[in-house]
Length: 320
Ligand code: ADE
Ligand code: ZN
Image 1 (cartoon, rainbow, N blue to C red):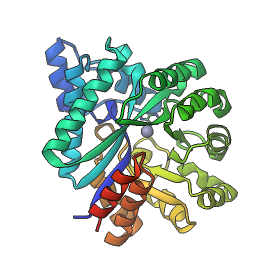
Image 2: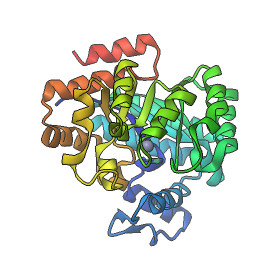
Image 3: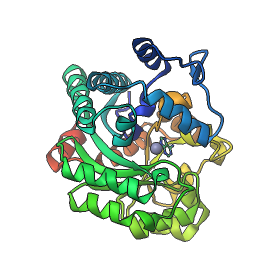
Image 4: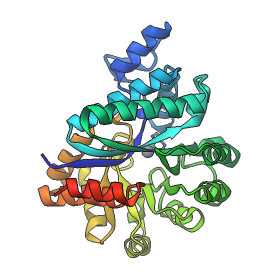
């Protein structure tokens, strides 16, 4: 089995329907609007986010989040992953009535339990939500800057890319960068090349979440390759959300051929009927990548991971 790693997964988006059903029973909540026939119900990006938000509100305690992180990471390790970096959202914790402190501590507890059981290494990336606006993202950045945690090593922004401009978030990203956090940002998923260019210019990330619509501008593709910006590519998510009509139309092979550093991740796996193992299988089947090419993407993920150099060396050594 090819060793795997992912650097783009939202922890709330990693909660499968079975776990959410258990949580709903625990809290006596009705989930019939978001889960039918053991699958999430949504039809476009907006309703996906609504469905995701409703499911996330069923994680209300420190232990709920410990269980979520442990469940996700144990499952990922069983798929052959040695490393995961996942997005956290203090806004979601607050919406569920949980303090950000309890949220981060719970997730960290789950990470330690999963590592003890499987050896999987993991880190968290704090995020702000773009649709909450610049002040909301700044609030998220300030909180994490004021509450450093050894397992929270990055800052990013998720949410609705169609809202606001990258430059509106420059201050939030400066706060995070000044706190020593590494930077990634979602761009080039729902919007095109301009969005990616704006993110690079104003937010200065080392990685871009998705970034795949950079393919619409050859000069931008060249810039990504030259500046060694790593793309967190999530093909199954892109197909599920209709960013591309088919795997044949997906640009991962063209980006890779152009010298862009690409990696594979699952984004919100149960929402998009995927898993990290399935993403690797997709790359094999639809993009013609062999074991060496797949391992190369795992290596790129580790090289771009938001970890200290000793941890990076240990992880790279595990790839052989
Ligand atoms: N939050 C969770 N999944 C997301 C995605 N694919 N794009 C933007 N924000 C998200
Ligand atoms: Zn994402």
